[in-house]
Length: 569
Ligand code: ARG
Image: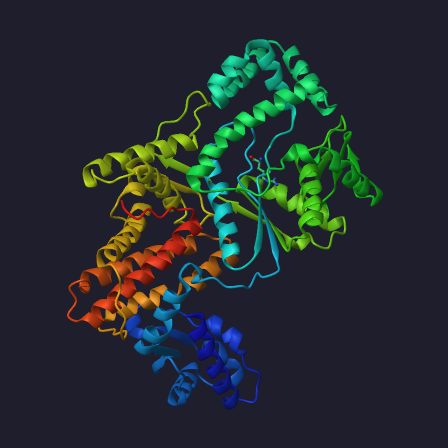
């Protein structure tokens, strides 16, 4: 639809220019003003004329009527003026000769644009603190981050996904101390990350009564900083164990990263930035600590060095941003985290600006609200935390149960149950805006009938099964005979715009909601229009091509929000 919008906008720009000597909006701007009316009886596209009234010194109603009187544009069947709106009806021939052939021809590339060509985007997401399993909060950064990455890639950007592991700090001194005191190689090998959490929790409990444990932990971390081989070896081992656990989740989500350079990597890169801050007179000593005063910007001070001279979270982020700029020469560096960290990002972004880095405005923080899921047990071992793997496991179990009765003969049932169960959680989460706190009940997310992931994936599988049954699709003229067919094509033609919007707004829900629109349009078409038993060969072929086009768009759209596309459910 982008192309047609552009064409309409160009004609509109000419018409407007001929009506007044005053400057009028250019075609590109007009294209963005074209809306989809809520009810297609009012037209397929509409343009509110209110904003032209001032410049043209005319009532919007008159402007609309005047344009409608002469407007013609290829692809537009008719134009009407109603109460200051121009309503365009799209010519069905446009769908038959332009939209459908384009989807079929482009296939997996349909919807892609190349606006990002030659530009690089770095994305920092997921980034767990190692030695702790993923909890439900990590779902946000992981799937939002990956979806933002994929939408950028879809639009032609070169993307670098970075998992900025939280792999440095005194907590590793604690873990090493705990391991030496109570742990054993065998137990770590057997118990994995859960065992590491157990001894870490025990460390805290015992340190309450024996504060010398904390001194010991600090000492072990200090040794790590000095490069002590034994401690570094232990730390590497714990890191590997954590990564193995995370990889299980990443595999379920189909996520890979280009870099796992975590906080530890920047240890030797911070001094240069601290030095620069000092030379620029940006550091102030406050109660022994070094800070950057941000009062002039109505922000609390940014902590750079503790009293003992050790570095902090913002110090590392500054060094990492400089390193990434030098390494990737990014056009944008996007950080996806919970909104509790918004202040942290606002502070250090400001410090980067004060340091004179002219790329400070290429740093973007995308915050998301808290997530809670009802209907899954909390993990008592992890301090009553809701673990992501427990959420996924509960979803997969439930889907397996449903599928055991619904599709007992399905090959690969376990794999499909995993794809549908995990997908259900993601889909439901990504349906609301990411900025708001989200809370949902597991059984709602799993319903095969509601506005859910299973329903979307099921619709995709339905298109696959129709196409499989049909075999080869015959050649011949495209013949649209029912309004549901045009509505479906209209929905399919909006795909590119939806992805573009999701990308620009850092808001995957644009895609999730779009997928539901496609599923609804397809299911209406499916119920109203017989496909394999259509009245003529031409109509049948056309409907099969429509099914194929839906299959293409859903197949392109679902992965953009981290959902898999099983062909049979
Ligand atoms: N490791 C942090 C956490 O789990 C998130 C890191 C976000 N990225 C960054 N560059 N600060 O809270």
